[in-house]
Amino acid sequence: MLRRFLLVSLIPLLLIGCGPESKMATITGTVSVDGKPPATGSISFVAIDGLTPNTGTEIKDGKFTSEVPIGESKVEIRVPKVVGKKKLYDTPDSPEQDVMIELLPPKFNEETELRYTAKKGKNENNWDLKSK
Image 1 (tube, rainbow, N blue to C red):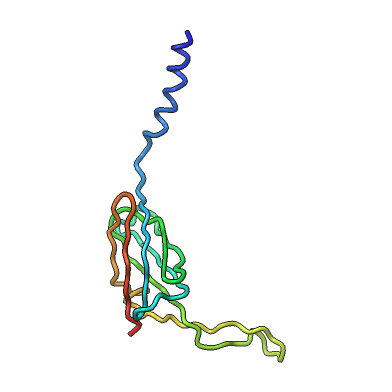
Image 2 (cartoon, rainbow, N blue to C red):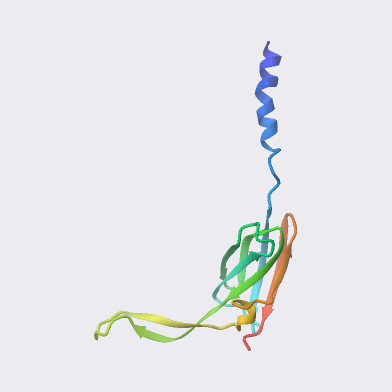
């Protein structure tokens, strides 16, 4: 009786690991712009197949780690650059906000030419981009 109870109790535990295989992988890497790591930015992975979710993360001091869809993705990298300040209100004591522009050309973000094919498990890729 005890053996039967243990067997019946263990079957659901054994089946838990038999679910569908993950369609995601992990990628780490670096981004440099004109040979230097940007302080901040973002990187997005847009699945080419349209079936897996789009993902992305922050770039900090040129480094990133993100979950990515397995297979080919378009890669969009954005690096903001502060070019000035702007008052939020037309008053003398108005707080100011940074005015920013995109440092990278559209071929690295809005009209990206970058691609990456992620494989199961851990992946690594480094991008060295030019601002002009």
